[in-house]
Length: 317
Length: 281
Image 1: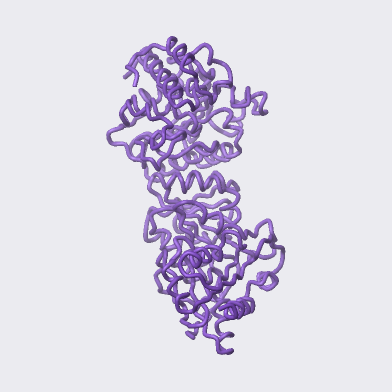
Image 2: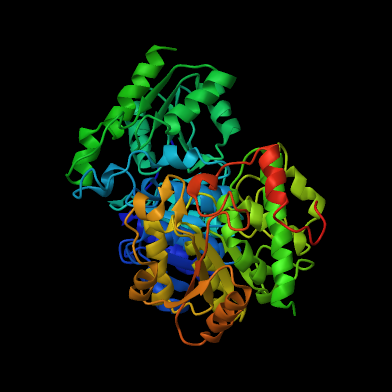
C-alpha cells in the first residue's frame, strides 16, 4: 500500500488558523468572528494582521451567527467560529434561518469536534454535529483529516459561494497529506488503493484507517483507504467505484451513528451497490473526560477497531 | 416629501391591504401589522433612502430594512408593493402555494425588497447589526433599520444583539419596537415579565426615543431625532407606543387578532372603517 509519513504532529485547528490568515490575505472580504474563543480557534494571527476584520462577539453565539449573516449580506465572507457543540447544537435554529434558508455566504468554523476535545467532557464533546449540519438544505459539510488538509479546506471554503460547515479538532494528530494539495469540495480522495475492502474514513479517523490498512496488509488483506473530506455533497461516484472493486466496506468517523457518514454511505450502497458494510463510530453516546487518546480507544475509534470491522465485513462477502 | 396627511392616507390603504390579504388567505397576522402600519408607512414612504428600481440584496448605497418580527408580512408586503418593489396585484397571492409572498419573509423566492428571511423570532436585530457593521467596514454612510416586536423582545438573542451593537458603536443602526403590549397568548405583561422596555434599553446603553406610533407628526419627529444621533457612537431604539389592530374598532387593543383572519363579513366591516385612498389590489 502507499505509505504515508507523519511529518510531525499538529492540531487541525492550527491548520484552520493558517488557512484563515491566508484566505484573509487573498481576499479582503474575508472576516472572522468568534464568541470569546479567539485563541482556541487559532484566530490570533488573523486578528493581529487584520484587526478591523476580526469581530469579537463575546459569549453570545446566537447573535454571532446572525451578525455573520448580516455581514455576508453586505458582501463579506465571514468565518464564525466556536467549539463544535456551540456552533451547531446551540445555534441550530439561527443557522437554519439566517444561514441556510437565508442563503447567506457564512462559513461555520467548528473546532474541538468529536470526543477528542478530551478533558472538558461530554458537555463540550459533540458527536451529533455532522447529523445536524447534513440535515440542512444547501449546507456543505467538510471534515478534513490533518493540518495540511484543514488549511486547504479553509481556503476552499472561503472560495465557495454558499454556506459551509468546516469541522476540525483540538488535539495534535499526524500531519501526512501534502502541504500543497488543493482541496476540491465534493471530491473523495483515494489515499491508498486496495482490492479486498474499502475503508471510508473522515477527519481524525483517516490516519487510523491508514494504520488499519497497514495491519491488514500484513495479514494479506489489501484495503483501499478513501478519505471523505467532504461529507456533503458526498462524492457518491467515488464511493460506488471503490465498492464495485472491493465489494465490502467499513466507514469510520469520530461521531455518533445517527446521521453520520456511516448512515450516509449505507444509503448510497443500498441504492446503488448493496454490499456488506461495517461501521466504526461512537454509537449512541455522550462522551466523558479523559485524554483524547484514551477516549478514542475507550469508544472504539482507532485502527484496531477499524481492522476488526474490516475482517467482519470480509467474512460477510 | 410626503406630508403627514399624505402619509396618513397611504397608511389607510396599507391597512386595507392588510385586512384584504389576510382575509383572502384565510390566515396571517393582522394585529401587529395594523399596529405598526403608521410608523412603517412613514419609514418606507418618507424616511428611508431607498430605490426599488436599483435595489439589491446587498443594500449597497441604500438604507436597509429588516423585519425581525417576521410574521408581520401583511404590512411589509403592502409597503413594498405600494413603493414599487413589485406589482400591487401580486398582493393577492399572499400565502398561496407557489407565491413569492410567503407567510414569513423568504429570500429563496426572490421577492424584491426582502433582505433577509425572518420569522423565527429574536434574530433580525443580529442580522441588522451585521449589516450595519458591514456598512461601517465599507464606509457606506447609509442607515440600517430594523423592527422588533415587544413580545419578540422576550427572546434572549435580542439582548445579545443589544450588547453587541453598543460595543461595536453601531450608530448607523436604528431599531424600532412596536410596543403594542400584546402577544399571542395575551397581554405581554401577563405572559412575561418583560417590564419597562424604555429602562431596559437605556440600561443596555442605547439611545432611546419613545413616541406615539399612531401620531404621524410624532413619528416623523422620532425618526428625525433618531437620525440626528448619527455620529454619537450609539445605536438608537425607537419605542413606538401602539395599539394592536389599530384602525378597526373590533380588532383594536386585543391580542385576539394577533394571528387570526377575519371572515368575509368581518372583512367588509373592517374595510368600511378604512378609506380606500390608492385603489385596492
